[in-house]
Length: 386
Image 1 (cartoon, rainbow, N blue to C red):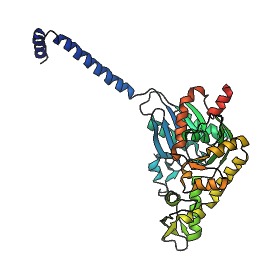
Image 2 (cartoon, rainbow, N blue to C red):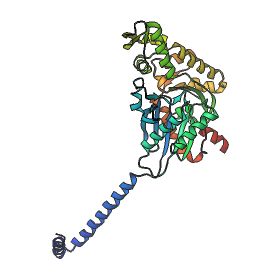
Image 3 (cartoon, rainbow, N blue to C red):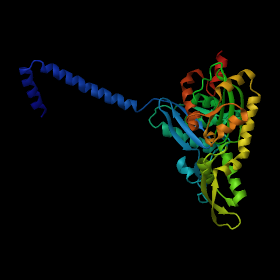
Image 4 (cartoon, one colour):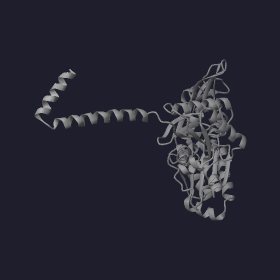
């Protein structure tokens, strides 16, 4: 077949002298196709990428530089206590909460924004890094956000866990700093901005200016405390026991901290305390205001405390720029309106409030070359360089 093609080409060349040039062009095109296919093969195997991790108490979000947020999983791990092995991580493990047999325990290794079970957290981070680094030759550099009130011991635990999980270098950034960057605020100008980040385990409140945190406060009251408050309310008022996942579902569906123009209700299934039998009750959004009053009041007190300690010049900027709320807890109905009424400062919820911290952490990856390993945030490194 090949010889026949050669003979035919010779006949064509004899009739058309330019046919030989056409053959050369075809050969060049074939070489280009082979080159492109090889380059595409190598593109699928990157040497390394920088990764940003929002290591939240309730949810872990992973940001890969150049790609954006590629993974969002609950920070839950299922463990077999007989063999001390990890069975499931993330969404599949979350489905096991409250439903496991005696030898399997579904745990959340992060509490109040910090590591409570080191070995389990290490395995969880390792699992998530492997999920996003399947085709990388070298281990990635990782930036992890941490609460503003984290201690040196807690900070070291996060850094060590990430290193053992496979990161080549580990950097830390404070949550309010990452939240502000993710919300699109210009934190490096001589202008005051106030951020309230309500996560799963902690609420971080900070005033930022010139690339640094001027005043901040981190309180261990956030989404988890909201769930606990709902569980207590249902037990106290209706004598019904409900689980944490049920309380979280109520919070997401009808959670409110301000008068609702159109009240909503939801049916709640639990166990009656007096009879020990299943019971169904109906709860509306107005009751949520009463149920969440205690943790919400604590957050409002924290916001007012930060405002009281803020320099007067920056308060003028905050009055003009307003307060920006981020995190899943800020999505409770009317939370921004309540903060505005209590403080007298215009307040808004950032777009993509849940992922603001992860987005800010990811954007900070562009400055890794200017940081020292283990640095808390960009502002401190800038002060050192200046």
